[in-house]
Amino acid sequence: MGSGSLHSLRRPIIDTDANTIKLVGHGLKTGDAISYDSGQGTAISIQGGTLTKGQIYYAVFVDADTIKLASTYENAVATTPTTLDLTGTGTGNNHSFQPSTVILSSNIINIGSHNYSTGDAVIYNNGGGTNISGLNSGTTYYIVKVDARNIQLAETLNNAKKSTPVVINFKSIGTGTNHRLVMQMPT
Image (cartoon, rainbow, N blue to C red; front, side, top):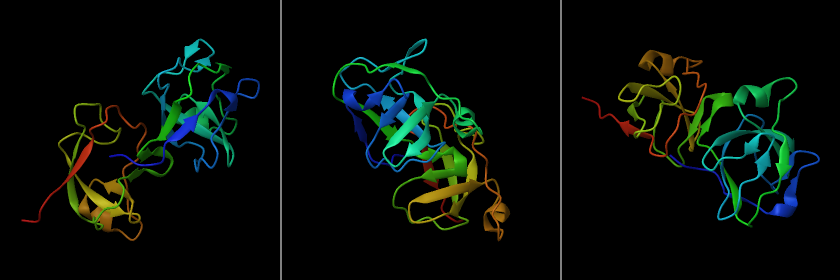
């Protein structure tokens, strides 16, 4: 699963005084999960260490071009968000943040263009990583089609097909990059 556009960061757009990161036209909402990569440079410094390559952080919307980072979803969406203290800009020109495919705030998985319909049975596989919380690798779930790019999952066909579907509540996005949903053919 993979989606979103790659947002390149350059040293001048990290503001350690305001603890903000400028990403022109980022399209992120508070609580969106994003993965960090320092490229070939050294990582952006934070109080007590540095941002970690491949680590998931959570956006805190400042404006259409600026975000702050939180270490957890709960910290990001709190009434008064708890954000990371950016203490250094790192080195290099290829720092990036990639939006995650799992959106905790709405229990959505962005799988790109798909042909799923509400009620389709799929088997979730964590690809050797850790499970998206609420899901178990090897278990059958049922699609709730949100739109042409996004789905939610329900534990039963009945829950998926309710007028207001009962979807699985995700608390974390798991780890790894090979998570898959495998379509189950009707018997």
